[in-house]
Image 1 (tube, rainbow, N blue to C red):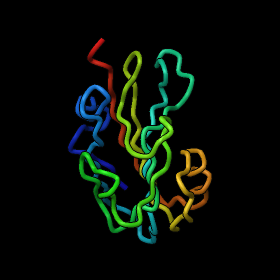
Image 2 (cartoon, one colour):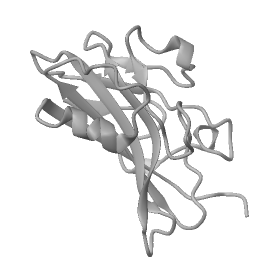
Image 3 (spheres, rainbow, N blue to C red):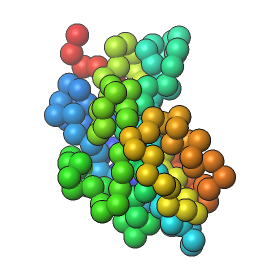
Length: 157
């Protein structure tokens, strides 16, 4: 499975409009080569370098989506929750809300992992799960995984 973006290249810088210093809009994401038998997709975006890449203490969760239909192959940039593909459900990020929250590192260059999972099932309604609760639910159901990583360092001091 492949995960790409027209917004940034793998291991490249995420442009400012997609961060807290810009419009804080979600990047365009597209995927291909979804395995046969996929019943749903999960997207988790997180930063393992929080708060300081030199001494990370936690992984900060930026976006949690699940039950994305396998017939969908792209999320456009700046997608509003109301425009998510039918059936897609949202989880809670570390700002304790649903939706996308862009990079906003307090110090240093952080890495942002966009992880897409192909599942052999449609998950039950988990409400608005945390990343940990969603990861527990997808255990044993992952057919394939793709990762797209972008970086960001705050421009304004």
